[in-house]
Amino acid sequence: MGIGSNLRNYWGITAGVRAYSRQPIPENLAEVVRRQVDEREETWLALVQRAIFANTQHPYKRLFDLAGCEFGDLEQSVRSIGLEPALEKLYDGGVYLTESEFKGKTSIVRGGQEIPSAPGDFHNRAEEAWIEVATGGSSGKPRPLDYGTGSLLTRDIISALTIGEFNLHDYARLMVRPVLPSAIGVMMGLSMSRMGCPIDRWFATGGSAADSFHYRALTRYLVHVGRLHGATVPAPEYLAQGDFAAPIEWIAREKANGRQTMLSAFVSPAVRMAALAMERGLDVQGTIVVAGGETVTDAKLTVLKHAGMRLSARYWISEIGPIGIGCSNMLNEGRTHLMRHAVAVISRPRLEPITQTRVQGLHFTSVSPLCASVLINAEMGDAAVLERTDCDCTLGRAGLNWEIRDIASYSKLTGQGMTLLGTDIVAVLEERLPNRFGGGPADYQLVQFQAEGQTELELRVSPRVGVGNLADVKREFTSALRGVYGGSLATRVWEHSDGLKVVEREPSATPAGKVLPLHLVRGSAENRGAHES
Image 1 (spheres, rainbow, N blue to C red):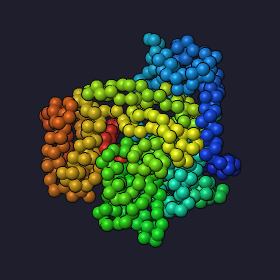
Image 2: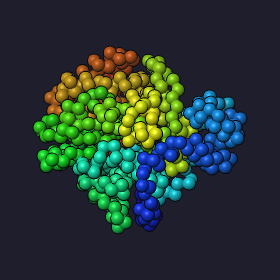
Image 3: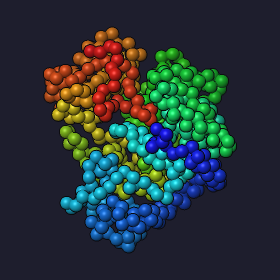
Image 4: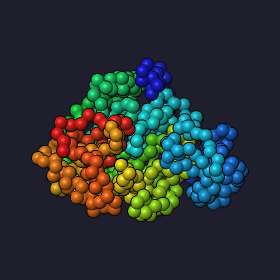
Protein backbone atom coordinates (compact mmCIF):
# COMPACT_ATOMS: atom_id res chain seq x y z
CA MET A 1 0.00 0.00 0.00
CA GLY A 2 2.72 2.42 -0.96
CA ILE A 3 3.86 2.76 2.59
CA GLY A 4 3.16 -0.90 3.11
CA SER A 5 6.85 -1.69 2.86
CA ASN A 6 7.33 0.32 6.05
CA LEU A 7 4.29 -0.61 8.15
CA ARG A 8 2.46 -3.82 8.93
CA ASN A 9 -1.12 -4.11 7.82
CA TYR A 10 -3.88 -2.78 9.99
CA TRP A 11 -5.05 -6.22 11.02
CA GLY A 12 -1.64 -7.12 12.37
CA ILE A 13 -1.53 -3.88 14.36
CA THR A 14 -4.98 -4.55 15.77
CA ALA A 15 -3.95 -8.03 16.89
CA GLY A 16 -0.73 -6.66 18.36
CA VAL A 17 -2.40 -4.01 20.47
CA ARG A 18 -4.95 -6.60 21.64
CA ALA A 19 -2.18 -9.01 22.67
CA TYR A 20 -0.30 -6.25 24.51
CA SER A 21 -3.39 -5.04 26.36
CA ARG A 22 -4.07 -8.59 27.61
CA GLN A 23 -0.60 -9.04 29.13
CA PRO A 24 -0.76 -9.22 32.93
CA ILE A 25 0.94 -6.43 34.87
CA PRO A 26 3.25 -7.66 37.68
CA GLU A 27 2.39 -6.18 41.06
CA ASN A 28 5.93 -4.93 41.80
CA LEU A 29 7.84 -4.03 38.66
CA ALA A 30 10.79 -2.72 40.66
CA GLU A 31 11.19 -6.19 42.15
CA VAL A 32 10.91 -7.67 38.65
CA VAL A 33 13.84 -5.46 37.59
CA ARG A 34 15.91 -6.53 40.60
CA ARG A 35 15.29 -10.18 39.76
CA GLN A 36 16.24 -9.55 36.13
CA VAL A 37 19.50 -7.92 37.27
CA ASP A 38 20.28 -10.95 39.42
CA GLU A 39 19.55 -13.34 36.55
CA ARG A 40 21.06 -11.31 33.69
CA GLU A 41 23.99 -13.64 32.99
CA GLU A 42 21.80 -16.74 32.61
CA THR A 43 19.28 -14.71 30.61
CA TRP A 44 21.99 -13.55 28.22
CA LEU A 45 23.44 -17.02 27.73
CA ALA A 46 19.99 -18.37 26.84
CA LEU A 47 19.44 -15.48 24.39
CA VAL A 48 22.79 -16.04 22.65
CA GLN A 49 22.31 -19.81 22.47
CA ARG A 50 18.88 -19.42 20.85
CA ALA A 51 19.49 -16.44 18.58
CA ILE A 52 23.11 -17.00 17.51
CA PHE A 53 24.57 -20.46 18.18
CA ALA A 54 21.45 -22.21 16.85
CA ASN A 55 21.90 -20.38 13.53
CA THR A 56 25.11 -21.38 11.75
CA GLN A 57 24.72 -18.54 9.21
CA HIS A 58 24.36 -15.77 11.78
CA PRO A 59 27.13 -13.16 11.42
CA TYR A 60 27.90 -13.37 15.13
CA LYS A 61 28.18 -17.19 14.89
CA ARG A 62 30.84 -16.68 12.23
CA LEU A 63 32.63 -14.22 14.51
CA PHE A 64 32.52 -16.73 17.38
CA ASP A 65 33.92 -19.40 15.05
CA LEU A 66 36.80 -17.17 13.97
CA ALA A 67 37.51 -16.40 17.62
CA GLY A 68 37.59 -20.15 18.39
CA CYS A 69 34.79 -19.81 20.93
CA GLU A 70 32.13 -22.52 21.28
CA PHE A 71 29.04 -22.04 23.42
CA GLY A 72 30.51 -24.18 26.19
CA ASP A 73 33.57 -21.90 26.29
CA LEU A 74 31.33 -18.84 26.46
CA GLU A 75 29.20 -20.34 29.21
CA GLN A 76 32.24 -21.17 31.33
CA SER A 77 33.73 -17.71 30.82
CA VAL A 78 30.55 -15.85 31.84
CA ARG A 79 29.97 -17.98 34.92
CA SER A 80 33.57 -17.76 36.10
CA ILE A 81 34.43 -14.08 35.52
CA GLY A 82 31.06 -12.37 34.89
CA LEU A 83 29.29 -10.94 31.85
CA GLU A 84 31.20 -7.70 31.27
CA PRO A 85 34.68 -9.26 31.68
CA ALA A 86 33.61 -12.03 29.30
CA LEU A 87 32.46 -9.40 26.79
CA GLU A 88 35.86 -7.71 27.09
CA LYS A 89 37.54 -11.01 26.17
CA LEU A 90 35.15 -11.48 23.24
CA TYR A 91 35.96 -7.98 22.00
CA ASP A 92 39.68 -8.77 22.07
CA GLY A 93 38.91 -11.94 20.11
CA GLY A 94 37.12 -10.01 17.35
CA VAL A 95 33.51 -10.53 18.46
CA TYR A 96 32.16 -7.01 18.01
CA LEU A 97 30.59 -4.71 15.41
CA THR A 98 31.82 -1.28 14.50
CA GLU A 99 29.20 1.39 13.85
CA SER A 100 29.78 1.23 10.09
CA GLU A 101 29.58 -2.59 10.10
CA PHE A 102 26.29 -2.61 11.99
CA LYS A 103 24.78 0.02 9.69
CA GLY A 104 25.94 -1.85 6.59
CA LYS A 105 28.28 0.90 5.40
CA THR A 106 31.30 -1.41 5.45
CA SER A 107 31.70 -5.19 5.33
CA ILE A 108 32.51 -7.22 8.42
CA VAL A 109 36.06 -8.44 7.98
CA ARG A 110 38.07 -10.40 10.56
CA GLY A 111 41.36 -12.15 9.93
CA GLY A 112 41.11 -11.37 6.23
CA GLN A 113 37.73 -13.09 5.93
CA GLU A 114 34.59 -11.19 4.90
CA ILE A 115 31.44 -12.17 6.78
CA PRO A 116 28.17 -11.64 4.86
CA SER A 117 25.58 -9.65 6.78
CA ALA A 118 22.43 -7.57 6.38
CA PRO A 119 20.66 -5.32 8.93
CA GLY A 120 17.84 -7.84 9.28
CA ASP A 121 20.30 -10.51 10.48
CA PHE A 122 20.39 -8.88 13.91
CA HIS A 123 16.62 -8.69 14.50
CA ASN A 124 15.37 -10.64 17.49
CA ARG A 125 13.34 -13.39 15.83
CA ALA A 126 11.61 -14.26 19.11
CA GLU A 127 9.94 -10.84 19.04
CA GLU A 128 6.61 -11.25 17.24
CA ALA A 129 6.61 -7.94 15.41
CA TRP A 130 3.36 -6.33 14.38
CA ILE A 131 4.58 -2.92 13.29
CA GLU A 132 7.63 -1.68 11.43
CA VAL A 133 8.85 1.76 12.45
CA ALA A 134 11.91 3.93 11.84
CA THR A 135 14.89 4.62 14.06
CA GLY A 136 15.57 8.20 15.12
CA GLY A 137 17.99 8.95 12.29
CA SER A 138 20.41 10.81 14.55
CA SER A 139 23.43 9.78 12.53
CA GLY A 140 22.04 9.37 9.04
CA LYS A 141 19.11 7.78 7.22
CA PRO A 142 16.58 6.15 9.57
CA ARG A 143 16.45 2.37 9.38
CA PRO A 144 13.34 0.20 9.58
CA LEU A 145 12.93 -1.69 12.84
CA ASP A 146 10.36 -4.29 13.83
CA TYR A 147 8.51 -3.65 17.09
CA GLY A 148 6.09 -5.89 18.91
CA THR A 149 4.60 -6.67 22.27
CA GLY A 150 8.01 -7.23 23.84
CA SER A 151 9.09 -3.67 23.04
CA LEU A 152 6.00 -2.31 24.78
CA LEU A 153 6.51 -4.54 27.80
CA THR A 154 10.06 -3.20 28.06
CA ARG A 155 8.68 0.32 28.00
CA ASP A 156 6.16 -0.63 30.72
CA ILE A 157 9.04 -1.25 33.13
CA ILE A 158 10.61 2.13 32.38
CA SER A 159 7.23 3.86 32.68
CA ALA A 160 6.58 2.22 36.06
CA LEU A 161 10.02 3.16 37.42
CA THR A 162 9.63 6.76 36.23
CA ILE A 163 6.10 7.10 37.64
CA GLY A 164 7.20 5.75 41.00
CA GLU A 165 10.38 7.83 41.20
CA PHE A 166 8.69 11.16 40.38
CA ASN A 167 5.19 10.41 41.71
CA LEU A 168 3.77 11.39 38.34
CA HIS A 169 0.20 10.64 39.43
CA ASP A 170 0.26 14.15 40.92
CA TYR A 171 1.47 15.79 37.68
CA ALA A 172 -0.17 16.90 34.48
CA ARG A 173 1.41 14.83 31.71
CA LEU A 174 2.30 16.18 28.28
CA MET A 175 4.05 14.71 25.24
CA VAL A 176 5.65 16.67 22.42
CA ARG A 177 6.52 13.71 20.24
CA PRO A 178 6.32 12.78 16.53
CA VAL A 179 3.78 10.40 15.06
CA LEU A 180 4.64 7.33 13.01
CA PRO A 181 7.00 6.21 11.56
CA SER A 182 8.59 7.10 14.93
CA ALA A 183 7.10 4.75 17.52
CA ILE A 184 7.90 6.74 20.65
CA GLY A 185 4.67 8.75 20.85
CA VAL A 186 2.26 5.85 20.34
CA MET A 187 4.20 3.46 22.55
CA MET A 188 4.62 5.92 25.39
CA GLY A 189 0.91 6.75 25.25
CA LEU A 190 -0.11 3.08 25.43
CA SER A 191 2.42 2.24 28.14
CA MET A 192 1.67 5.19 30.44
CA SER A 193 -2.03 4.40 30.22
CA ARG A 194 -1.43 0.74 31.09
CA MET A 195 0.61 1.83 34.11
CA GLY A 196 -2.35 3.89 35.34
CA CYS A 197 -0.82 7.29 34.57
CA PRO A 198 -2.11 8.29 31.10
CA ILE A 199 -0.81 11.19 29.05
CA ASP A 200 -3.17 14.21 29.12
CA ARG A 201 -2.15 15.94 25.87
CA TRP A 202 -0.06 14.97 22.85
CA PHE A 203 1.33 17.71 20.63
CA ALA A 204 2.93 16.20 17.55
CA THR A 205 5.85 17.40 15.50
CA GLY A 206 6.69 16.25 12.01
CA GLY A 207 5.65 16.74 8.40
CA SER A 208 2.60 18.44 6.96
CA ALA A 209 -0.74 16.76 6.35
CA ALA A 210 0.10 16.58 2.64
CA ASP A 211 3.37 14.66 3.02
CA SER A 212 2.49 12.49 6.01
CA PHE A 213 -1.21 11.73 5.55
CA HIS A 214 -0.81 7.95 5.79
CA TYR A 215 1.31 8.14 8.93
CA ARG A 216 -1.20 10.47 10.53
CA ALA A 217 -4.06 8.16 9.62
CA LEU A 218 -2.26 5.09 10.92
CA THR A 219 -1.32 6.86 14.14
CA ARG A 220 -4.95 7.83 14.65
CA TYR A 221 -5.96 4.22 13.97
CA LEU A 222 -3.51 2.94 16.59
CA VAL A 223 -4.90 5.40 19.12
CA HIS A 224 -8.43 4.23 18.27
CA VAL A 225 -7.51 0.54 18.64
CA GLY A 226 -5.80 1.28 21.94
CA ARG A 227 -8.94 3.00 23.23
CA LEU A 228 -11.07 0.03 22.16
CA HIS A 229 -8.90 -2.13 24.42
CA GLY A 230 -9.15 0.15 27.42
CA ALA A 231 -6.20 2.52 26.89
CA THR A 232 -6.51 6.24 27.54
CA VAL A 233 -4.38 7.76 24.78
CA PRO A 234 -4.87 11.32 23.50
CA ALA A 235 -5.07 11.95 19.77
CA PRO A 236 -2.10 13.97 18.48
CA GLU A 237 -2.57 17.72 17.97
CA TYR A 238 -0.24 18.87 15.20
CA LEU A 239 2.11 21.81 15.58
CA ALA A 240 3.22 24.07 12.75
CA GLN A 241 6.92 23.84 11.98
CA GLY A 242 8.97 25.69 14.57
CA ASP A 243 5.91 26.67 16.63
CA PHE A 244 5.93 25.41 20.23
CA ALA A 245 3.60 28.02 21.71
CA ALA A 246 0.64 25.68 22.35
CA PRO A 247 2.46 23.17 24.59
CA ILE A 248 4.37 25.73 26.66
CA GLU A 249 1.20 27.80 27.16
CA TRP A 250 -0.61 24.62 28.28
CA ILE A 251 2.14 23.98 30.86
CA ALA A 252 1.86 27.56 32.12
CA ARG A 253 -1.94 27.24 32.47
CA GLU A 254 -1.58 24.01 34.43
CA LYS A 255 0.95 25.72 36.71
CA ALA A 256 -1.41 28.65 37.24
CA ASN A 257 -4.10 26.13 38.25
CA GLY A 258 -1.77 24.65 40.87
CA ARG A 259 -0.57 21.58 38.97
CA GLN A 260 2.99 20.86 37.87
CA THR A 261 3.67 19.18 34.52
CA MET A 262 5.82 16.30 33.30
CA LEU A 263 6.93 17.03 29.73
CA SER A 264 8.21 14.21 27.51
CA ALA A 265 10.11 15.48 24.47
CA PHE A 266 13.37 15.41 22.61
CA VAL A 267 15.95 17.79 24.04
CA SER A 268 15.84 20.49 21.34
CA PRO A 269 12.04 21.04 21.37
CA ALA A 270 12.18 21.20 25.19
CA VAL A 271 14.88 23.87 24.97
CA ARG A 272 12.83 25.80 22.41
CA MET A 273 9.85 25.72 24.75
CA ALA A 274 11.97 26.86 27.69
CA ALA A 275 13.31 29.80 25.68
CA LEU A 276 9.78 30.72 24.56
CA ALA A 277 8.54 30.63 28.17
CA MET A 278 11.22 33.13 29.20
CA GLU A 279 10.55 35.30 26.17
CA ARG A 280 6.83 35.50 26.99
CA GLY A 281 7.21 35.63 30.76
CA LEU A 282 5.40 32.33 31.31
CA ASP A 283 5.78 30.62 34.67
CA VAL A 284 6.80 27.01 34.07
CA GLN A 285 8.96 26.63 37.18
CA GLY A 286 9.19 23.07 38.45
CA THR A 287 8.31 21.33 35.17
CA ILE A 288 10.01 17.94 34.92
CA VAL A 289 11.39 17.41 31.42
CA VAL A 290 11.87 13.75 30.52
CA ALA A 291 14.09 14.12 27.47
CA GLY A 292 16.65 12.29 25.40
CA GLY A 293 17.49 11.53 21.80
CA GLU A 294 20.23 14.16 21.67
CA THR A 295 23.34 15.07 23.60
CA VAL A 296 22.50 17.25 26.62
CA THR A 297 25.06 20.01 26.15
CA ASP A 298 25.82 22.64 28.80
CA ALA A 299 24.21 25.31 26.62
CA LYS A 300 20.91 23.43 26.34
CA LEU A 301 20.92 22.63 30.05
CA THR A 302 21.49 26.28 30.92
CA VAL A 303 18.37 27.37 29.01
CA LEU A 304 16.23 24.76 30.79
CA LYS A 305 17.60 25.78 34.18
CA HIS A 306 16.95 29.48 33.56
CA ALA A 307 13.32 28.68 32.75
CA GLY A 308 13.05 26.71 36.01
CA MET A 309 12.57 23.38 34.20
CA ARG A 310 14.20 20.23 35.61
CA LEU A 311 15.72 17.74 33.18
CA SER A 312 15.55 14.00 33.78
CA ALA A 313 17.85 12.63 31.09
CA ARG A 314 17.07 9.57 29.00
CA TYR A 315 19.49 7.50 26.93
CA TRP A 316 17.70 5.15 24.57
CA ILE A 317 18.88 3.31 21.45
CA SER A 318 16.07 2.10 19.21
CA GLU A 319 17.79 -1.15 18.22
CA ILE A 320 18.52 -2.11 21.83
CA GLY A 321 16.07 -0.30 24.09
CA PRO A 322 16.61 1.70 27.28
CA ILE A 323 20.25 2.36 28.16
CA GLY A 324 20.09 5.04 30.85
CA ILE A 325 17.30 6.65 32.91
CA GLY A 326 17.77 9.64 35.20
CA CYS A 327 16.28 9.71 38.70
CA SER A 328 15.22 12.55 41.01
CA ASN A 329 18.75 12.77 42.43
CA MET A 330 20.16 13.38 38.95
CA LEU A 331 17.96 16.26 37.80
CA ASN A 332 19.76 18.81 35.61
CA GLU A 333 22.95 16.75 35.67
CA GLY A 334 22.74 14.59 32.55
CA ARG A 335 23.50 11.47 34.62
CA THR A 336 21.47 8.29 34.26
CA HIS A 337 21.14 4.86 35.87
CA LEU A 338 22.39 2.14 33.54
CA MET A 339 19.60 -0.29 32.68
CA ARG A 340 21.69 -3.37 33.50
CA HIS A 341 18.65 -5.66 33.49
CA ALA A 342 18.29 -5.04 29.74
CA VAL A 343 21.75 -4.18 28.41
CA ALA A 344 25.45 -4.69 29.11
CA VAL A 345 27.93 -1.95 28.22
CA ILE A 346 31.70 -2.01 28.05
CA SER A 347 33.93 0.95 27.23
CA ARG A 348 37.14 0.93 25.30
CA PRO A 349 39.52 3.87 24.91
CA ARG A 350 39.68 5.22 21.41
CA LEU A 351 40.98 8.35 19.73
CA GLU A 352 38.72 11.03 18.32
CA PRO A 353 39.47 12.01 14.71
CA ILE A 354 41.91 14.86 14.10
CA THR A 355 42.63 15.92 17.69
CA GLN A 356 43.44 12.35 18.77
CA THR A 357 41.71 13.07 22.08
CA ARG A 358 41.20 9.87 24.05
CA VAL A 359 37.55 9.03 24.85
CA GLN A 360 35.79 6.01 26.29
CA GLY A 361 33.90 4.52 23.34
CA LEU A 362 30.83 2.48 24.27
CA HIS A 363 29.96 -1.00 23.00
CA PHE A 364 26.49 -2.40 23.67
CA THR A 365 25.22 -5.94 24.22
CA SER A 366 21.54 -6.90 24.33
CA VAL A 367 20.59 -8.79 27.50
CA SER A 368 16.80 -8.74 27.59
CA PRO A 369 15.01 -11.47 25.59
CA LEU A 370 12.52 -8.73 24.62
CA CYS A 371 15.18 -6.67 22.78
CA ALA A 372 14.42 -5.57 19.23
CA SER A 373 17.91 -6.57 18.02
CA VAL A 374 20.40 -9.12 19.33
CA LEU A 375 23.76 -7.34 19.47
CA ILE A 376 27.11 -8.12 21.07
CA ASN A 377 29.72 -5.39 21.59
CA ALA A 378 28.07 -3.13 19.00
CA GLU A 379 29.52 0.35 18.61
CA MET A 380 27.05 3.22 18.16
CA GLY A 381 29.41 6.21 17.93
CA ASP A 382 28.95 7.31 21.54
CA ALA A 383 31.34 7.83 24.43
CA ALA A 384 30.58 8.13 28.15
CA VAL A 385 31.79 7.39 31.66
CA LEU A 386 30.58 4.24 33.45
CA GLU A 387 30.85 3.94 37.22
CA ARG A 388 29.09 2.48 40.25
CA THR A 389 26.58 4.56 42.20
CA ASP A 390 25.06 4.18 45.65
CA CYS A 391 22.06 6.34 44.71
CA ASP A 392 19.11 5.78 47.07
CA CYS A 393 16.17 6.05 44.68
CA THR A 394 13.57 3.79 43.08
CA LEU A 395 16.04 2.72 40.39
CA GLY A 396 18.95 2.20 42.77
CA ARG A 397 16.83 0.07 45.07
CA ALA A 398 15.83 -2.02 42.04
CA GLY A 399 19.47 -3.04 41.64
CA LEU A 400 20.40 -0.50 38.95
CA ASN A 401 23.54 0.57 40.79
CA TRP A 402 25.70 1.67 37.88
CA GLU A 403 25.45 5.07 36.22
CA ILE A 404 26.35 6.31 32.77
CA ARG A 405 27.20 10.00 32.42
CA ASP A 406 28.92 12.58 30.20
CA ILE A 407 27.33 10.95 27.15
CA ALA A 408 28.50 12.45 23.85
CA SER A 409 29.00 11.47 20.24
CA TYR A 410 32.50 11.34 18.83
CA SER A 411 31.20 11.73 15.28
CA LYS A 412 32.71 14.21 12.86
CA LEU A 413 31.65 16.50 10.04
CA THR A 414 33.44 16.13 6.71
CA GLY A 415 33.19 18.22 3.57
CA GLN A 416 35.44 19.08 0.60
CA GLY A 417 38.25 17.05 2.14
CA MET A 418 38.04 18.90 5.45
CA THR A 419 37.21 17.17 8.73
CA LEU A 420 36.08 18.94 11.90
CA LEU A 421 35.01 17.50 15.21
CA GLY A 422 31.29 17.75 15.82
CA THR A 423 31.89 18.82 19.42
CA ASP A 424 33.89 21.87 18.28
CA ILE A 425 31.17 22.98 15.86
CA VAL A 426 28.36 22.38 18.34
CA ALA A 427 30.03 24.73 20.84
CA VAL A 428 30.02 27.49 18.20
CA LEU A 429 26.40 26.83 17.20
CA GLU A 430 24.98 26.53 20.70
CA GLU A 431 27.02 29.09 22.62
CA ARG A 432 29.01 31.58 20.57
CA LEU A 433 26.38 32.46 17.95
CA PRO A 434 23.46 32.78 20.43
CA ASN A 435 25.64 34.95 22.70
CA ARG A 436 26.49 37.22 19.77
CA PHE A 437 23.18 37.41 17.86
CA GLY A 438 20.49 36.14 20.24
CA GLY A 439 18.29 33.10 20.18
CA GLY A 440 19.17 29.79 21.80
CA PRO A 441 20.94 26.49 21.19
CA ALA A 442 18.18 25.17 18.92
CA ASP A 443 18.14 28.22 16.61
CA TYR A 444 21.35 27.51 14.69
CA GLN A 445 22.09 24.43 12.60
CA LEU A 446 24.85 23.44 10.20
CA VAL A 447 23.60 21.34 7.29
CA GLN A 448 25.88 19.38 4.98
CA PHE A 449 24.55 18.27 1.59
CA GLN A 450 25.75 17.26 -1.85
CA ALA A 451 25.15 20.11 -4.28
CA GLU A 452 25.87 19.97 -7.99
CA GLY A 453 29.60 19.44 -8.28
CA GLN A 454 30.58 19.72 -4.62
CA THR A 455 29.67 19.16 -0.99
CA GLU A 456 28.28 22.33 0.55
CA LEU A 457 27.46 23.60 4.02
CA GLU A 458 24.44 25.65 4.96
CA LEU A 459 24.28 27.47 8.27
CA ARG A 460 20.61 27.89 9.13
CA VAL A 461 19.44 30.64 11.44
CA SER A 462 15.87 30.54 12.69
CA PRO A 463 13.81 33.54 11.51
CA ARG A 464 12.75 34.02 15.13
CA VAL A 465 16.24 35.25 15.98
CA GLY A 466 15.71 38.28 13.76
CA VAL A 467 19.31 38.69 12.58
CA GLY A 468 19.59 41.85 10.53
CA ASN A 469 22.64 40.96 8.48
CA LEU A 470 23.41 37.31 7.73
CA ALA A 471 26.86 38.28 6.50
CA ASP A 472 27.71 39.17 10.11
CA VAL A 473 26.69 35.67 11.18
CA LYS A 474 28.92 34.17 8.52
CA ARG A 475 31.89 36.26 9.63
CA GLU A 476 31.35 35.33 13.28
CA PHE A 477 31.00 31.64 12.44
CA THR A 478 34.13 31.43 10.30
CA SER A 479 36.06 33.49 12.85
CA ALA A 480 35.07 31.01 15.56
CA LEU A 481 36.01 28.03 13.42
CA ARG A 482 39.50 29.42 12.84
CA GLY A 483 40.08 28.92 16.55
CA VAL A 484 39.48 25.13 16.51
CA TYR A 485 41.77 22.40 15.30
CA GLY A 486 41.64 22.21 11.50
CA GLY A 487 39.30 25.20 11.28
CA SER A 488 41.65 27.67 9.60
CA LEU A 489 42.29 25.38 6.64
CA ALA A 490 38.61 24.39 6.41
CA THR A 491 37.36 27.99 6.28
CA ARG A 492 39.91 28.89 3.58
CA VAL A 493 38.78 25.95 1.46
CA TRP A 494 35.10 26.78 1.91
CA GLU A 495 35.61 30.47 1.15
CA HIS A 496 37.51 29.63 -2.02
CA SER A 497 34.79 27.28 -3.25
CA ASP A 498 31.91 29.40 -1.94
CA GLY A 499 30.85 26.19 -0.17
CA LEU A 500 29.41 27.82 2.97
CA LYS A 501 26.09 29.68 2.88
CA VAL A 502 24.16 31.30 5.72
CA VAL A 503 20.39 31.28 5.33
CA GLU A 504 17.45 32.46 7.39
CA ARG A 505 15.44 29.28 7.80
CA GLU A 506 14.10 27.00 10.51
CA PRO A 507 16.53 24.20 11.39
CA SER A 508 15.51 20.84 9.97
CA ALA A 509 14.29 17.96 12.08
CA THR A 510 14.97 14.28 11.59
CA PRO A 511 11.99 12.05 10.69
CA ALA A 512 11.67 11.32 14.41
CA GLY A 513 11.45 15.03 15.24
CA LYS A 514 14.95 15.63 16.60
CA VAL A 515 16.60 18.96 15.81
CA LEU A 516 20.32 18.23 15.74
CA PRO A 517 23.02 20.96 15.60
CA LEU A 518 24.71 19.06 12.76
CA HIS A 519 22.38 17.77 10.06
CA LEU A 520 23.51 15.60 7.16
CA VAL A 521 21.27 15.57 4.09
CA ARG A 522 21.55 12.48 1.96
CA GLY A 523 21.52 13.54 -1.67
CA SER A 524 20.79 17.03 -2.96
CA ALA A 525 19.94 20.04 -0.84
CA GLU A 526 16.48 20.87 0.32
CA ASN A 527 14.95 24.09 -0.96
CA ARG A 528 16.74 27.02 0.55
CA GLY A 529 15.16 29.91 2.38
CA ALA A 530 14.43 33.21 0.76
CA HIS A 531 17.19 35.08 2.58
CA GLU A 532 20.75 33.89 2.37
CA SER A 533 24.30 35.19 2.42
